[in-house]
Length: 295
Image (tube, rainbow, N blue to C red; front, side, top):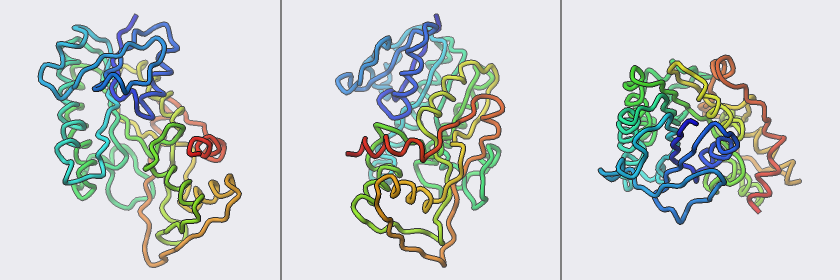
């Protein structure tokens, strides 16, 4: 039975990934919690209370491990510079701490979630190799993830490393300050939606169930790789709002700035579909579950 260690198990993606892993009898699953009282327990998952930022964290973890899913990220990602130390500590320092632990504990796989925000420029769709050039103007959060990617890549000769770059994951239990819940709230409250250009930016959001399936499938890979983690459809901000408005039976008020060119954030998922998993969930088919979750 493989021993699997997971961070970020209380998050949207982490919780869904733990649910999937816990349904298999092939794994012994352990989830790291900084505060065990905040854990949302799942059957067949052992929770370990440990702060990965502490120098002696490894003393609380198994001496051997088969795979590590590092899905935790700083909750303060928007609060730069006032929370810069927390962002760097959780996103970057903890990533190194876990890599060092994983290597010493004999891990064969290290699976890491970065961000689609590392891509810069204005091309209509981003492929994984576009991440080789990075502009620090992408922001401190994206910078912390980019540095972490490079740390992970340095260990790729010692274990199989898989990096995922998510594009707008959505689903039940999502924090209210994320894009889709904010759109739902604004449309409910008749708040005008600002659009760059006529239609606003284009994105390819991925449902959390599709995203978690891709992550768990990566345990089957034996070669290091980087994957964009996006959904099956390219939607404009206007499209998203109209789908939400239709589900709410509400008209949507838009304010367009036709002089401003939107910067699309769409990840090409050709490699994901070819080597790992094909996302299939369409936004319009699952929007009602988000609306109900926001009530």
